Image 1 (cartoon, rainbow, N blue to C red):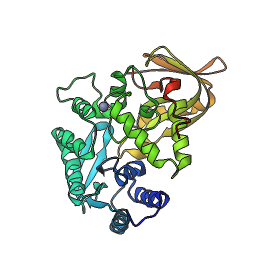
Image 2: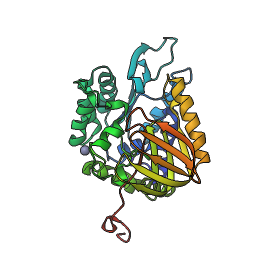
Image 3: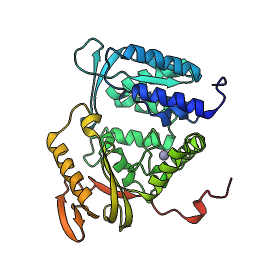
Length: 336
Ligand SMILES: [Zn+2]
């Protein structure tokens, strides 16, 4: 890294690495700047004939940045909502992804790949994986809870960790409003978790001045948007006049929704009726100007006329969430 003069150079290379294998450039940046020790990812894109060349380029970029990389010698079939994770050989005709690990140290990169694989097949490796990634202890404990080893039917586990964080929260720090945007690689034990907030602050501070536009946009979204949220793959961001009684009862009068629904491409297998329903909701949200959320149903209306009233199967799916109002003393203006 010492060879590179400025952060903008580094950021350009990090972004190229991100594009090659769908790696989070934010998380990579965290590793480059020692905010976290390692990263590993399995959702790296379908393995194909172009993969070896892309791996070579990734290796070059890593060496420019003082990083080491490792990758699996097998492919993985991933389908997160149903918890499918299957290991297949590289020449298996079925589509699969490589696991890629990146760290400052070669051993850590190799270990990251191995632990990622193990944790998907045996939940008992989740904690050692998290430790390797530098996750806070309080959130590692939460990870143990998400494993749901005792089969608690009220625990969504890794299918919807954001909702599990929400259930343990009294307030939502803007840094941790993962319903709107997640800048942290782990699942926070609560949406006001101290070490997790510190991590987001460190990432945003490191990025300030390198990619100022991104930082300003991220802060604006985290502080000012509400999210209509099903899962990390399906959400709609809404800005407007937001009121809530608690996390399950809220309403918003909104303008110009920002629709982020990607489960059809994010997951390898999907439920068609769920996708069809989302499509309908998306259209009604565009036509509407007000959304009402209750534990039993939600309602989209325009100018007082109801466009869609949808019964919910679970009080927390979907939810309408905004970060808790920021107190004046928390503002960082004027400190620099
Ligand atoms: Zn925590």
